[in-house]
Image (spheres, helix red, strand yellow):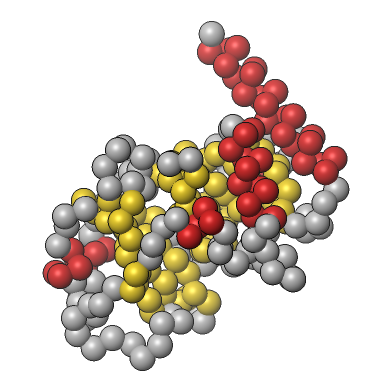
Length: 218
């Protein structure tokens, strides 16, 4: 049974890889995926959501379903939000049927903005406990994505045909949760924006990768 599941999964990944290679379209291409329908729908949404330089704007309806609001912390904060912003939203990030308080931060590394997120129970008072001079109550949660300066290897959907297993997101990250058919997913990419990972968040610092996409021509 395990062998058959692996065989079917491998065939699915291979077929997705081949269809992406044949597509020959500009913009992002689907390279590997765990669920063909999901990946195809996300790819279609992303292709509708790029600017004239083929960069994602994150303005599609799947992103706008999550209502982010600026966080107002106590203490003296920075004058601009470019390299120091906090936003919050209430949605079921880990898909367990309960709403979560999700705080997304953007801080700069060597002048380039990088995103992280932190998850809490919906009734958490963490934002009342934290302030600009002491963010430790926010950062202490084990449920987070916090990789600035680190790496996110694309190893969950490896195939010899695509060489995905040798690819790693590094340095600074753009992290954008979105909703599709009532489920939450996370879009991850790095400063190069060559590869995008679509993943489900599993709590802690664990993710289940669903799709790998790559910018054509790179």
